[in-house]
Each structure stands twice: as C-alpha cells, then as structure tokens.
Length: 249
Length: 201
Image (cartoon, rainbow over all chains, first blue to last red; front, side, top):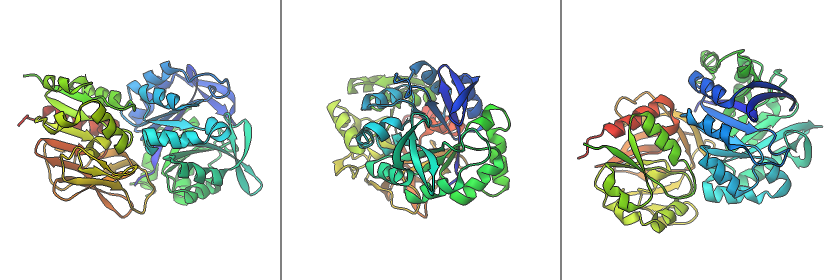
C-alpha cells in the first residue's frame, strides 16, 4: 500500500503558523484555505494541530475546525490540548475522523487511550510523539516540544499501542522546521517497534527527503508542513517524484 | 418521485455529518434518521459506521432500529462498520449478534501489514453491480481493524499485507463497502452518486 502523503497544519487560531524548532511562529494563512488547496493538490489526509491549546490550558477552538472540515473529502485528524473523552467526542462531531493526543496521555492519565479506543475504536485514536534525541535514545516531549517527560520514545510507542492507539504521529523536536531531512533512524526504530501505522513528520526539505524516508523506514504516512506552506512544491509534484522513483505506485 | 437518502444516526461518533456532506456533494437529498418511524419518509438508507461492533449494536437496539432494519425493503448501503453490522455475528470486544442481513462474520484482520489498515487502495471488482459501476480503477480510503468473512455475496476484494479481504458486498437491495466513500475524494462521491441513482427494485 502506498505511503500516505499528508498535509499538516499547525494552527495558532485563527492562523496556520510555522514554528521553527517548535518556537518562533510565522503566519501562513487560514487553515480552511490551505486545507482546500492541499486537498485539491491530492493530499491523502489532513492533520490539524492546535499548537497552543495545550500550553495555554484552554479548549481547542471549534470555528476553524468546522470550516476546515467542510470542504474536505479525505480523512481529517485534529488535535491539541485534548484532555477527556468529551474532547474526543466534541472533535469528532466537529468533523474530525481521528483525534490526536499527546500531553495529557503522557503527563496525566495514559488510560485515556484505553477509554477512547473502546468508545470510538482504535482507528480514531492517534498518539502524537514529540521525540528529542538524548544520547543513543529518544525522549518524549510534551506541550509542543517544550517539556521533558522522562519517557523513552520506543517504550511509550509500544505502551500506546497496547493501550489501543490506532496510529502514531511521530515528530522530531530536533529536526522540526529545519528542512534538513527527517530523523530516519528514529522513524525506522519506531516503525519497527509497533504493529500500528506510523506517520512521520518534521524536517522535510524536499521530495528526495521523503523518498529516502520511505525507502529506509517504510512509514505508513509522511506529514508535511513547511515545504507546502512556502509553495516550494505541491503534493502533486511530490507524488510524481515518488512514483518516478518507484517508491509509490 | 422522491429520492431521499436517510442516514441512520446512532452512537456517539459523529461521522454522519461527513456522510451527509458527501451525499449532498453527489447531488442527493438527505434526511438524518433518528428513529425507525422515519423509515417511511426515505427511499434509501445509509448505515454509517465509526466505533465498535458491540457498542453500535447496543445503540441500534436502544434506538429501536434492529427489527425495522431487517424488514426495510429499499436499498441499504452500509459503510465500514455499517457494512460489518450487516453480518450475523461480530467478534470485537467479545461476541455480539449483528443485523443478520448477510451470511457473514466479522473478525480481526490477520495479515502481514500494520493494523489498522489505513490508506488509499484500489478494489478488485469480482461481481460487478450498479454501485461499483465505473470505479474499477479508483482508490478508496480504508480505516479498519476488522474484516467481514463472507463467501456468498462478495462484490469486491482488496489485497493488503499478503491477505485478501472482502471490500464490498451486495445481496439483493443490500450493499456494503468496507472503505469510506465519504473520505475517498471524487471516486467516493461517484460511488455515492451511483447509490443515489440506484433503481428501487
């Protein structure tokens, strides 16, 4: 099956922003406009992450989400500051197909994964792991890559799977926003550690980076932000490149 | 002649709105069906599905949908879990009786690939019908951990992880798709258009 090419919107309402190393934000446009553009370019899926809701301890804002969902006929995952089963339910009713959770599951109550999987099905539960390299391993970070958790990435990935998560969104605090390529070693290790799909993000600088990532780590999906936001390429062009390299069909 | 597509509203997952939006995009008129009493106002029914087999059967039962569904004589389209619920029995979180509209069982996918099976894939039509007309080379979005085991009503198959599973079924007026047409771009809209245009017989 082809690796999914996913557009990722990091949102500080009302705008899509581009963090560099999870810091220093630039406004990129409205989420509904960008979502429509990437849908028309042939994105296989869309991720919408409210990157400040967890940090500010406020509720995820519904307006942009509903509007973004409206024009899409592809799967739509939403996350940011999710803290309860009610939050899952609210986001699914706003038009999300999957809900992305990180901070609360890592820091407060990992059991929320089990509960959500039982109620909504595993396919609706995506665990976001923000990984930062530490010696030979990686540590999970929370609150948009700001807070150390003391948890090992591979162990947490396996625990999340056992608890019923249906997918992992893997980001790298080290590579994010630098456009110098993915942490392929990290990606391969996580993909090999779990039986659930892994979507890899952070660091994409070119179609060639994506091609190498797929060949070496074989993730189920690749999520791209900066490269698309700056109009350096389109999803169409990325897919054409991957097809001509025989990396996707 | 009226042609209203009813969408059964049950359970707590909210994907009925994606289905409604996609049917309307395909040119159909929709009605959210909250009770079986509304069945008389619709010409076709869609059973959407997100959640678990067990929870969903419980919700259908609480809302009084089960018997009326068994006797509904117009076209039905089950989507993903909605197709699985057409089976005799499901094995997700224990054993649960299904709607028993098809001679089928629902079991975990056992294969070489990552589970849930998530992503776009083509279907191989083994028994063509009006619903799948013109969609032989199209890709559809799958998102599931369970599959329907059936030997008598297969319309399409899909290969994943060295394993072939049933991706579409048809029996008389009853249609099912394991994938999500509402999440499958233009191809999905086309399939829903085919459903809207089905003759009621």
